[in-house]
Image (cartoon, rainbow, N blue to C red; front, side):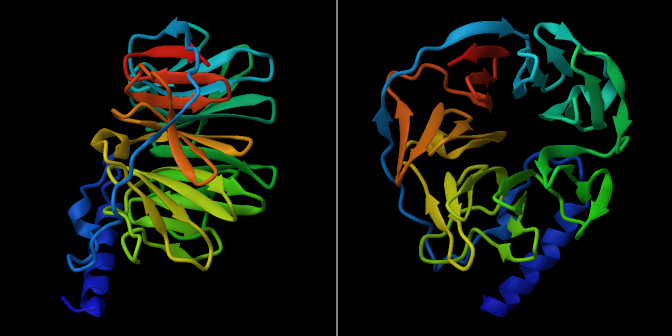
Length: 306
C-alpha cells in the first residue's frame, strides 16, 4: 500500500475507533505500521536490587489507582468496587465503580471513573460529581488546574479544551501537557507522534500510560513495550524478549526522581534507569496494576508498601 493511502486509511479508521467510548483497549490492526518496516528488535530485561513488599490492604478486586493523600491516608481505586479510603469503601454506584485515576487537588480527592469524575473530602465524605456519565480515564494537575482525559477529549476545569480525542492517559512535563490515545501521543500544542513509524518504531499505537522523560514522555503500550517520545525526533521503542513485559496496564506509570516505574500485565514492575530497563531482583508480583510513591497495587486486589 502506498504511504499516502495508508495514512489516509489510518486516520479514517481511527476516527471511527474514537466513537466507541466503552472500549478500554482498542484492537490494534487498524493502526499497525507497514509490513516492510519491522518493529524494533526485542531486548533483555536487566536486574536491579531487590525490594521488600509489605501488604497493607486486600480489596478483593483489581487495584487500578493509588494515592497517599496529604493527611497520610492511602486511597485506592478499583476495577469494579469504586474508591477506598484505607479499607473503607466510599460512595459511588454503577459505572462510578470503575475507577481509572486518583488525584488530590484543592483540598479534595478526585476520582476519574467510567461514570464521570467524583469529588471527595479528605475524610472520605462524598461531595458530588463532575462530567456526569462521561467516561474519564486520566487526571493531572496542569498550571494549577485539574485536567481530565475523557473519551471525548481533554477537559480543563471541566470545560472542553482542544480536539475531541479519545484520551487514555495524561502527563505533565515542565509546562507541557502530553496526551496518550489509542492512536499515539499528542502534545497539547498540537504535534502528533504516531508510535508505529521510524527505524525504531513500536508494533502498536495504543497508549495506556505516560510518564515525563527527558523533554518528552515515555509511553506504556498495550502490547508493544515502552516507547520514548521526544519533540522533533522519531520515536524509539523498547521491546523485551519476555512477551508479558510488553503488556502494560492502564495508568500504571510513576516518576521517582530519575527513575520511572511501569506496571505490566505479566512482567511485573519495570524500572527505567538512565538508558536501561530493569526489574527488581526476585520480583514476585507479575501483574502490577497501580503505582504511587511508596505504593503498589496488583490484579488480585492487594495493596503493598515498597
